[in-house]
Image (cartoon, rainbow, N blue to C red; front, side):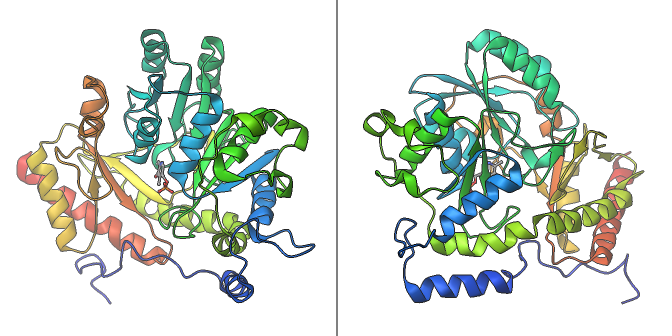
Amino acid sequence: MSDKFTGNFRGNFTQQEPIPDAGIKAAIRVLQHGRLHRYNVAEGEAGETALLEQEFAAAMGSKYALAVASGGYAIACAMRAVGVVAGDAVLTNAFTLAPVPGAIASLGAVPVFVGVTEVLTIDLSDLEQKIKESGARVLLLSHMRGHICDMDALMSICDAAGVQVIEDCAHTMGATWRGVMSGRHGVMAAYSTQTYKHMNSGEGGLLISDDDDLMARAVMLSGSYMLFERHLAGPPASAFETLRYEVPNISGRMDNLRAAILRPQLATLDVQCAAWNARYRVVEDGLRGTAGLTVIERPQDEDYVGSSIQFLLLDWDAAQINQVLQRCAARGVELKWFGGDEPTGFTSRYDSWRYAPEQSLPTSDRILRGILDMRLPLPFSLEDCEQIAGIIRAEVGAVYQSWA
Ligand SMILES: *Cc1c(COP(=O)(O)O)cnc(C)c1O
C-alpha cells in the first residue's frame, strides 16, 4: 500500500506469535503420557518443570530457580521467603502494575510507594527518604516496562540501609544492567510467563536466587510436600532439614504442560529480544523530534528488551491527551495512558489502589499524567512499526498544533 503514512494501521496489538513447533510437540507428549503434575514422573524421568528450572537458572546465571503458577505468585512467594509478615511496610514503585501492590496486600503487608523519574525508573532520592520514613526492610523493585534504574546506586542505598531487594522482572527477562542480568542484583527475582510477557505459557512464573535458605523456603511454600529432592535447580536436602516442618505449603506450582511450552521459548529468548529491540528502535526513531513529545532516552549501561515503548506528553491537559488517544485509536494504533483518573484495562495508577494508605507524590503525578504506553507485539513487521510511529507523530502533531 502506498498510503503508508496516511492510511490506518490494521495490525492487532494483542496478537502473540504462535507457540514454537517444538513446544507444541512437547506439550502433546505431556498430554499423551498424562503426567501433568510436576512430581508425577516416571522412573528415571526428570519432568518438564524440573528441566525448565534447570535451564532457566543456567540462562539467568543463578544457582537456583523455581517455576510457579504466576508472576504474582512468584513475587508473593519471594516476600514470604524473606520474612515479610502482615503489617510490615514494603517499599515498591508508584509506577507499576496492579499485581505488584496486590502481592504486597496478599500478605497483609502495607505498600509504601516510591516515586518515578522522567526516565521512568524509581526515584533514588525518594527511595532513600522513604526507607528512613517507613522503616521498611524490603524493597519490591518493579523494573516497570523494562526501564532499569542505576542498579549499582540502588544496591548501595539498600545495602547501606539493610533493605533486602526483591526484583520484579516481568518486563526485563533477558535484559542486563552493565552486563549483569536483570534479576541478579537482589536476593530473589520474579518473572512472569503470562501471555503478554517475554515467554508465553498463558499463565506462569519463575523465581531465582543464589540463597540456599530463601530458595528452600520458596520451594516448600510453592507446594513441594517432601518431594523437594526432585528439583534439579533447588538447594541441597540439608537446606530443608528444619524448614520442612516450619514452612507452610501455599500451593502454587507450575505443571509439566506449561513447562513443556516454555522450554523451547527459553532456548530462543535472545532471538526474540533482538526482534523486539529492532521494532523498538524503529518506533523510537520515528517519534524522535516530534514537538511536544518526549522520547525516553535509554542509558548506555542498560541493555533493555523493547517489548513495549513509552513516551511522555509532559504537562499536556487531560483533554489534549484524550484527543491523541482517540485520534490514534481511530487510525488503528492502541495507546495506553497511565495518567487517566479511572483505571482501565490493565492500566491503573497508585492512587486507584485504595487498599493502600493514601500517599501524596506530586512530582510523580506530573510524570504519570504524561506517560503513554504501547505494546510492540512480535508479529508486527519493521514496516508496521514505521507506520505506527508515523501515525503517532502525525496525530500528536495535529493536537499539539491546535492547542499551541
Ligand atoms: C504481569 C506482571 C506481573 C504479574 O504477573 P502475572 O503472571 O500476571 O501474575 C507482575 N509485575 C508486573 C510489572 C507485570 O507486568
